[in-house]
Amino acid sequence: MNFNLTEEQKAIRETVRKFAQAEVAPRAEELDRTGEFPYDLVKRCAEVGIQGLLFPEELGGTNADVLSWVLAIEELARGDASLAVTIFVGAGAGAVIQQRGTPEMIRDWVLPIIIGEGIGSFAITEPDAGSDNRSIRTTAEIRGDRIVVNGVKSFITNPGTKISKFINTVCALKSDVDNPRDRPFCIVSIPTGTTGYTVSEKYRKMGWRSSDTRECRFDDCVVPLNHMISQPGKGLEEGWGVLNLGRISLAATSVGLAQASLDASLKFARQRVQFGRPIGSFQRVQDMVVEMAVEIEAARLLTLQAAFLWEQDHDVQKEISMAKLYATEAAKKVADLGVQVHGGFGFMDEYAVSRYYRDVRIHTIGDGTSQIQRMIIARTLGLRV
Image (tube, rainbow, N blue to C red; front, side, top):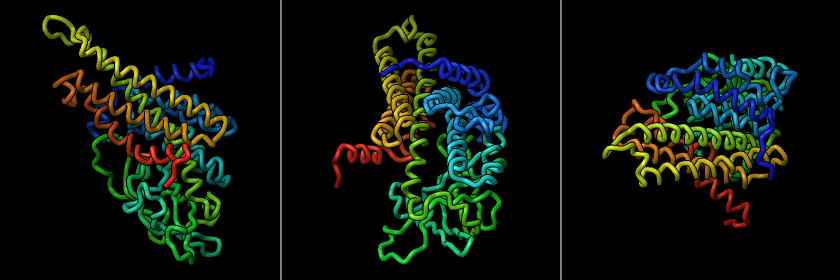
């Protein structure tokens, strides 16, 4: 395998790195403390070109490859994981519309995403349907040239901001099948402001505090039939495909957060003096820092491999799940070690490692838990129940 990045990929990484360190990282502590949504930084991300990476040039994007996207998201997360998840969920939802939506949907929803004046959401999880997707209760009923949606979605990213444009919603199509788990599914795009579509107040969260996360409710929510953006009956399968970009992106976010934790720990280990010398000179501290560095490098390589292979062939579920599993678990371990290196200071919110520790905890849960990733990997290896 050729591990050399192209000059364009290096330029993208360096551009986002400079932006994230100069403008994002200095704001991260304040945003974590206040929980305010960073509209200005979303706009600045677009001006830097991050959202546009996923979109074709005719729409104002740069038509970059997935590997470039991963490099950008890693660097953005190195500045602030909350902002990274806001951007990758919002742009990822828009990429689905760009591929499957109507010209009007592309004009009204996708173009604002590219310029940083809009974001989108993807809704699959429900109060009683997390890992068990076939237990989804949100329904879609076709009535002539309209489709009516009813149900509740939980833990949804980006639905309640002033620039939220739409939500791609996985629904069970109403049908006469005897076994509820055999129901056909679909994906329906619902514009923000549609009658019957409401969002709750923001959740109070351990981490990702400036990222908008809410419950969404649909009560006789009516949209045109052409807002069904999946093939009827193929909603779950196509939804799982959408999740793959999310899993690669969350793996990249995990690598970026872990790298930030290592950066902070190296700085602290050089400055903190105990027993008359910097703690970085002690073998036990060095052991922890080295373990952090090795975990990050392994996670980064798995993530880059998944991005590269997915660009060539979307049938690489094993590699994507391996990257998501390893990178998120490694980041959790690295964040824990970062706190340990800092000792009592790491327990204080004045130090960034406290935020990294809180932010990373959701990474092994969102976009498919570590346990689900292990199940997927086992199946790709030929082991099935």
